[in-house]
Length: 184
Image 1 (cartoon, rainbow, N blue to C red):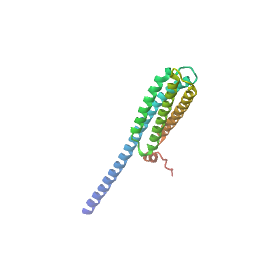
Image 2 (image 1 turned 120 degrees about the horizontal axis):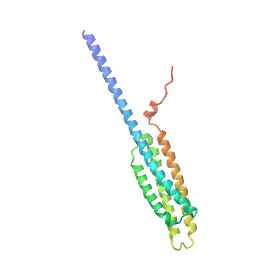
Image 3 (image 1 turned 30 degrees about the horizontal axis):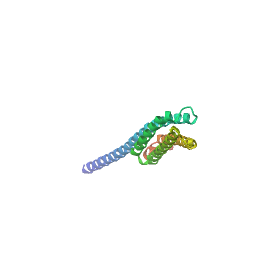
Image 4 (image 1 turned 90 degrees about the horizontal axis):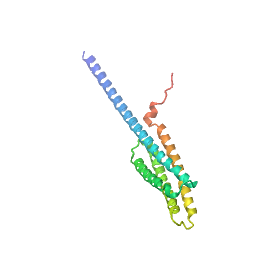
C-alpha cells in the first residue's frame, strides 16, 4: 500500500513540475510575442505618420524645384516637417524593442535623423531664395534644395523598407512556433 501511495505521489509531483515548467515557458513565449507585437504596432504607427509628413513636404519641395511655388510659400511646411521629424526620431529612440528588433529600430531612428538633416538643407536653400537680394547665390540655393529633396526621398524609402522588415520579422520563439515539423 505504501509503495502505491509513494508511486502516485511521485507521479503527481512529476506531473505538477511538468505543468509548472510548461506554464512558465508558455508565459515567457506569450510575453515575448506580446512585446514584439506591441513594438510592431508602434513602428507601424510611427512610420505611417513619418511617411505622411515626409510625403506631404516632398510634394511641396518638388513643386518648389519645378518653380510652381515660391520659397516663402513652403517655408512653413518645411519648418513643420522639421519639427515633426525631430519628434519622430526622439520617439523612435525611446521605443523599447525586443532584441531581434534593435537593429531595425536603430536604422529607423538614423533615417529619421537623415530626413531631419535633409529638411534643414531645404530650409537653408529656401532662406537663400527668400532673401530680397540673393546676390548670385541662387545656384547654391537650388543645389541645397535638390540635395535635401533627394535625401528626403531616400530616407522615406529606407524608413518604408525598415517598417516592412519589422512587420515580417519574428522573434526566436515566434520563429520556432511557426516551423513546420516534417510529417512521418
